[in-house]
Length: 324
Image (cartoon, rainbow, N blue to C red; front, side, top):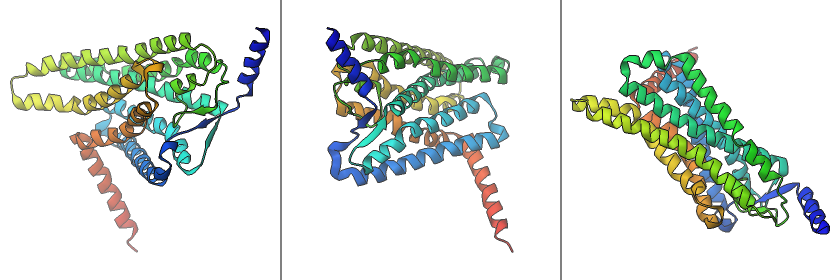
């Protein structure tokens, strides 16, 4: 028994790096995949940066709704930057190596931002609930101080929540293999590399994931249930459309995000197909952050108006700068 324990300890300390397998099964398509995801990453970064800058520049958008939207866009910038650059490198190399501490950092930042997004989407739905269901008291309840407190609470809770799971995961002996069957250091593929019993860690992971995912999701559903009841009581069709238009973009983003993340993290580790896991992971780590700024800019009149205003100013500036 002592010899086995020493062997496991040696194997654990010997792990200094992991190998990300990524999409190695599609070797012939690597160049096409690289170009495709580089394009998506460029659109994602550009769109979210524009949203943040427009909200900061236009005083008409200095409201709670757009304050939280700015936080969401900034989060999406960090979210995709944590995952996509390493994934793009994977398309250009035979084997993509990530150092042990790099894997720890990537998983921690990814997990923290995922929790933060769950909470932030819930706060945004609560903001819409107050605006539609309690319009007279909205300005006094959702003031700037409260907005800051809610946003700070989301970020702080998000970065504190994964710490315990990180400690449990990376103190496991990784002696089975160094090859991570994913395009980033995700929790479930890492557990499969451990040569010890991981049932306790899996159970704790499932419990924590359920709390940080389902509780904000249920709060979001409750907010939208109350919103729908209020909208149904509005007598005019125009009033109903106007009220629903203020939250339709957020509802669409919530549906995409929670739909994919619950499928990936809601099932036990052993019951998941690696290929499906990677496919759904792409949706919420790469595809969803690209669609979010498009959804908010194309479906929101105020954002479109602010974009036209900023575009007009930029065009005027460039035109004047060309005059001798």
